[in-house]
Length: 242
Image 1 (tube, one colour):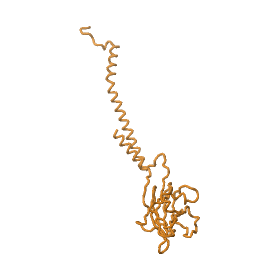
Image 2: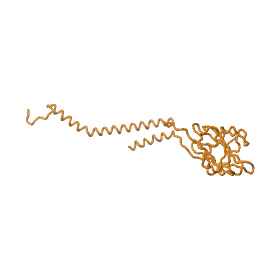
Image 3: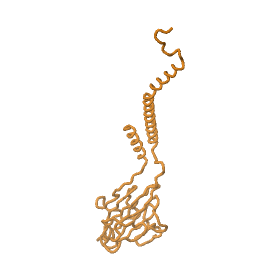
Image 4: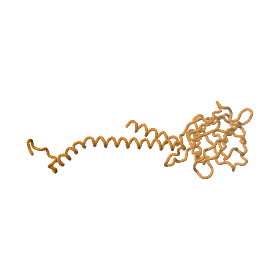
């Protein structure tokens, strides 16, 4: 029984090789990784995966001008961008700050709004929206998540210093009925299933043999008695008989 349970656990482990797992990670923190790009034509490249991807930064007017932040990321094939959640570290200087998304590796819209028709999403956010998903409100066109592809993001505050935090949530595609396994995974799975089948067959055979050992001697005795009754030759002769 214990061997069977162990083998079944191994099979479950093999299946887990083909299941994507969600993660929660900080893609960029300006306090640790430095300032994000100030050039929309050369956004900072961020790595994001399925699950939560945090981006923490600061924007706003400084003594030398407005500190705009630009970064880009890629939604993997088959996945979608389902949410942009405003995090608790956000502290807007005025009433609202600004965020926009454009498809591709560059954000070509000028700070004055030239080429704004290229944007896929744009809008303002305030401190009262912390914890909410901004994507439905700022996305242009049809509602719903953004599909796989590369996106460039523009964050801006024209007033004083403004801290911001966004959680870009990437969702995996709906899993298929049969998990995807690497080639060696299928071989290992077949081997484990064969071992389980052999073990169960051996246990069943042992059980049948144990049952036969319990009733076969009794049947043999009954069969021998019946045979002696039908064949007088096999009956024991009386003492002193011819």
